[in-house]
Length: 86
Image 1 (cartoon, rainbow, N blue to C red):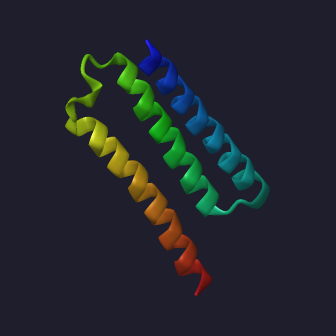
Image 2 (image 1 turned 90 degrees about the horizontal axis):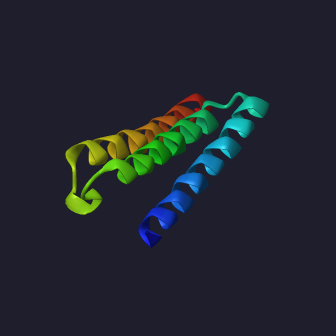
Image 3 (image 1 turned 60 degrees about the vertical axis):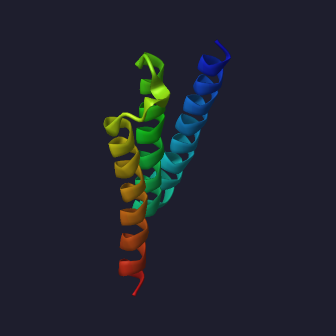
């Protein structure tokens, strides 16, 4: 029961962070903020999926694939920011 509560706190926190980055993107239209907002929203959805798995610690490949996609979004946003700066 406590695991579900803590997972809810993590999900809520990631969505709050995604909202902050989305607000910064709306103010600046900088794609770096959009990449971070999308990555945190995707990670929040990924963590929310843990609630519906029988054994979330089993190491499902889909969970790691979504997490990898989230990290690749962050790396792509950083690479795009550095590419446009030069």
